[in-house]
Length: 412
Image (tube, rainbow, N blue to C red):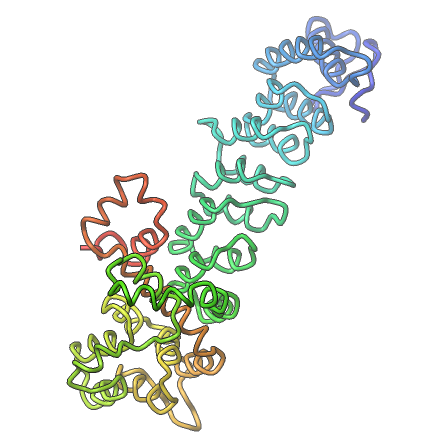
């Protein structure tokens, strides 16, 4: 049906399941007027002024209020192909019952961002409406932000599957946080180019084995450019006796050396290898804490790594600190992890061993240092409270990561 076609008023009009003839009295007149208003709204710009089109739309909206569902569906189906339709009419149909809204939300090209946002935010609109909007082509970041803000997993799934939708950084942050409760979002997030290293390496902690492998393959990168950019600053910071805590923390993230030499000099074990050998002989929380210090990470980060059920994080720690395979196996056994036999090794050890073999030392250091930086930057109760109350703290990537991974109760 051509939406620009004006029908003969004497023609029969099919509305719903009723065939209305020219002799149907007042009902026929109302339906004829309803059809005429649709004709006028659908006229090309060369045949009608914008003002008159909007007047016709206002009248049509009033008639839609008292029309039955089938009539409204027919109207939506007819107007769905229009490139020029008044916003008041689009919004009225778009926020109607889902059966009415479906044809116009799916394909109508006349919607602008404001219309879609208004419909998505309408109090009586359902998740189904927002799913239809999420599937539309070429959604920009503004519309996606609004849709993601409802934190509905079905809507976020539709958005992530929509290759023409564009995610902003805050929208990706929200969906990354949601993936902790809705793991089906993780593989969809990993396909998005908008996903940032901070988000992916945070999501690592609740991802499955295959997803962890993809995260490390994509986001475990060298720090060559950072090293080159900051090379001359290490000596200057040392001359200042590392008094600037922010500079010290940033340069620790960048530098090549991973182990803490000062901790090794004070340690009763003498070295990281010595601590791991002691752990294999006797499991001890104090030894685990010492291993964290010797590895150049905070105990909170070390506890998260060694308590991780998958074991891939232990492989990252061992590779980043330059431990040989012998001490990697000793660490695994010291943590009382299943090792299996040479003929039949355990699946978890095989996965961890793959990570150990596939990562270079420098890439493993990048991952370990990101975890250490992010997981320990918001561990104090005061900082956790500021994160919830202070808008400025919402810009701290490290604070958000720690708050998300450990949860509010663990920040005490």
